[in-house]
Image 1 (cartoon, one colour):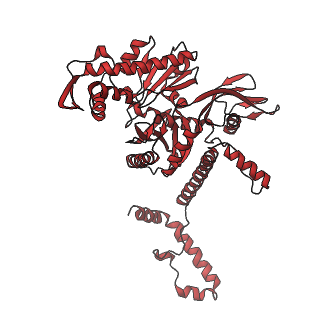
Image 2 (image 1 turned 180 degrees about the horizontal axis):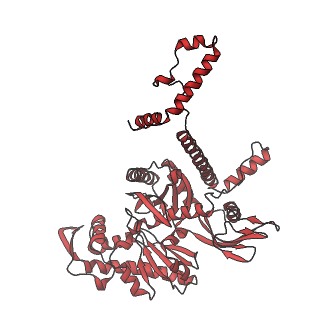
Length: 502
């Protein structure tokens, strides 16, 4: 990323969000955000190309103003919809030769996993290591700088998504004038909002968005399962419209300002007036009236999630449930979830200044994924294929074209690797220039002997005319001058210091 800034683009169903950040200790420091509401996206898919593109352009402009950073490269997050997760293993062998493990060895392993065969309608979004095994002895999370003699193996997870969804998403981003550095699935991103204890014991992240509720289960430090259900904040608004015969905008505003997800805790004293679609007489409803509708939808959402994870063999969630997303802003969501499950429940709100809203959780987590993989690979990104040869036969060209057509993101990863290499070269050149400039500044240039502001060093033109005729006299004159200089060092130093401070 240019100047080591990271930019995440979150194209959600209710709005497009951009977060600009940088690595800060073990987290992310957010330096600017942007958000634009749009109807161009529904259930994680683009349904109006122009609306979505314009929303991306507007959001990038807002983020540029907020951060002061010129944005042309982004990380894009991919929704969990139509996602599949598989687990596999791969190994590279060293034949008894002691070798220090580097980011390129890890890159090779993950690349081998990425090249595994998948169905034609699927695209590999993310390959993530669950653990590495060094010489069949040590199981570690990051083997860099360790010495291996026989083999380095990886247990990896592979996240795939619908190919058409990804192609349309990428094309829309590129049409907005942006370069995609990498894509990360929300399924992988959510790990960054969990604590170490939660992700080790086993926790479920539930992201309640506008059209989709996405969820992912992590255990023993890694993603195990992810899915989504087609319920979200829009369903709540539509039910309020039907129940109270009002407009969509008024129903949405009432939900956000007066809504409550837990009927038992809602108030009868909070009241809001709603216009009626078929009458001039407005209707006054209480927060408890709204809660009667809202609780039903959110409870159905939670129960759908619980049934789905139970059907996939997840019966114990010792680390608890972490709820985030825009709909988590509704009061009472935590209390309702706590009433349904025995495990711990918390609402996740990012703590970064300027992005302290649950709806920014996904974008900030995308930044964290970008930083995590840059560190794991020593700022070397996965390159799907070897560099193309300068010259090749017709058969070889056909093979390359065929290989390109099988993976939509080939050029994407190549661009990312080339950009990283260029950035490294720029950093090295800048360091050399700084060092050269420092050497020049520190160099002690010798004083010129013929300084015209010192009367005793001045040599008249007549002396040069007589020089060839009287060499001996010139030599004695030079010796006399040197003696004078040695006798007047103190006076010269005073003059130098005076000039410096003047």
